Image 1 (cartoon, one colour):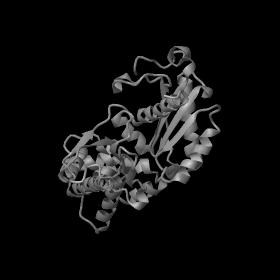
Image 2 (cartoon, rainbow, N blue to C red):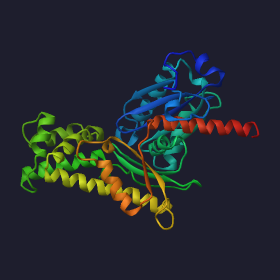
Image 3 (tube, one colour):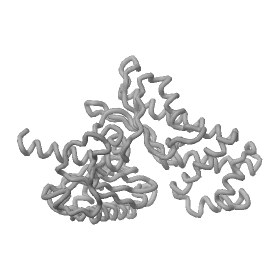
Image 4 (spheres, one colour):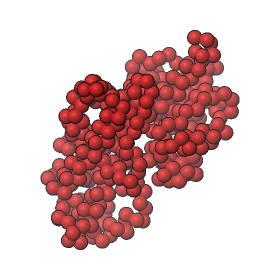
Length: 347
């Protein structure tokens, strides 16, 4: 944590220069990181001087509703400031990178809300959570493509001159099938179809029943609709991976199809922005984030996704971030704050 510890006095870690906040708001949880506003450019991920880190629940308004999402965001920022022994008036800049922010109207509503929380001249930036994820792999430089595959999935790209593009990220109803929710939902569907006689038998049936402590596939229907929250469904992904590693054909097909979905999502963004150059061979950074892309014993989902993308774009440079997306958001807030100071000073 860059030599700082939670609980150090504000005078010791931030002085009169204040702090910046970075928030990574996801469908499963929300993380807020507090950094000193006057810190120097970090030389490495390990050198980022984190003053405090707080965690709360989902802040995706499409999943939990706008009121609950805003309540979570306020809670996590308040908690981070308390852990850093500082107050709202010390905040110089905030970057909210939140899943479910998909349109300028979403950004505007959130900007109006956050301005009421922080007095003074703090600067605010509202983005989709993919922006923070990209920044976490590039240490705050927005260039390249990021693939997030957690509860949901999205690919987001930025060119060096600021052009942006995205694909997927539309939620489970509109088909984020490479996501954790998409994988688990297909597995649950496969179990029901097998039970009905509409699909092949699969070891997913017993594996999922054991995981959920149910006795019959009929009970899966009640379990699913008792609380159809996205994160609750997505939590079954490890069961699907385990079944695939044990050789189940249905589970393997689900994962292979999901790999192709994720690869196609990245390919669409890279082509639209020409991140790969005219001949599609230029190098570009591809940041990989999310639980679905974490390494497994045999079934390496991220490795398979990279193979698919590299067949099309041989210049793909995969990056697994050394810092979490919340730090990426905080670095963006810090960068905006620093640019503002330079402009004020005429430099």
